[in-house]
Image (tube, rainbow, N blue to C red; front, side, top):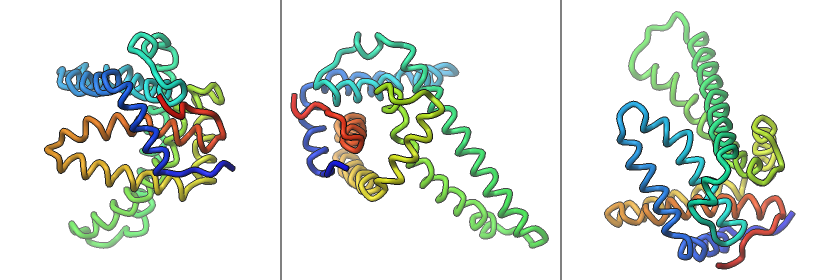
Length: 216
């Protein structure tokens, strides 16, 4: 297994962001604007724009540069990413429902109060959050051609389980940067969020031993 430095990956993500900031920030801002369109805005963002941001980050991490035309040039891969996210979301919701159902059975017969409802739901949400972390690598397994939609779930869980410490440290580092970006009147988030979309595929490529763009 290759040695992975989270700080070095963030440094590479920053270098690549500086070269591709117009593409990455443009996609993020477009997604935010479109999301305000009633009824269909959220659908467009979920099906097209967020997968496009994922693909843009992957292409930048892999090659060093990309463009709007290249990102949207393969609608099939964007659709696969959407389907992956949809299936993963449904699986996680099913797990949450099962956990809440089990908790309800265990607490059956007791008088429900607001505190007991919280006790019932919060552990399920914590477990759900941990499980959702395991699905981060699926889109990159799809984009790299390593897996289809369904097998990408298993590959993502396996990769994360083998490298949980690194993945969790990456998540914590991102939370710290998000907090810092939010403190800067929220403007910093226009840098931190697009960088995260570059950082994740860089992390995936490093953990799988593939070669990404070392510099722009």
